[in-house]
Image 1 (cartoon, rainbow, N blue to C red):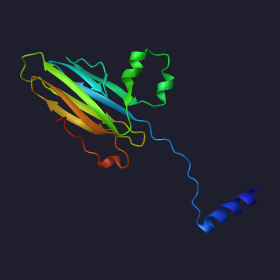
Image 2 (cartoon, rainbow, N blue to C red):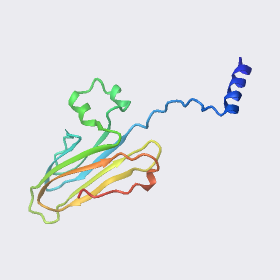
Image 3 (spheres, helix red, strand yellow):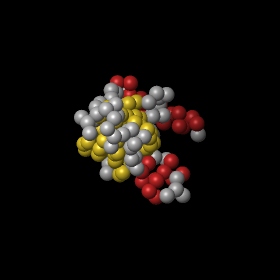
Image 4 (cartoon, one colour):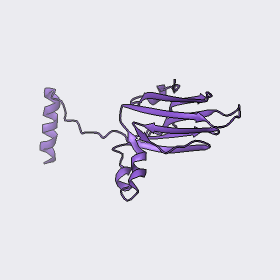
Length: 159
């Protein structure tokens, strides 16, 4: 049996036939949002889903792609929690932020970071990093989940 498989494989190579490729699953998308929002109220959504971030403090959330393997493991969790975590699409996504300053402290600012934590790297990949100092606003920012060489990814600003 082994010999016939070897001969078949050798024949395919000899005639230049393409080898069948095994389907490879895409790497799950693991990301996070971290904000420092002292003196600000805010609302953050990804792809139209409110993430439950309120502002007034430092807070963060881990987000994942909609087909992430952890989704099945969380089947017993509240539906709202699951919907807030599994929001990312491979490729294009949209971030929406609305914010309003609630304090009179001139030093208050809104720091925002969106990063990936790829399985293939021991370092996070920063996609968006920015500091907002204005009193209020609404931002809608499209961003892509990068593929390929992540070392070349440079973070962008919200505006």
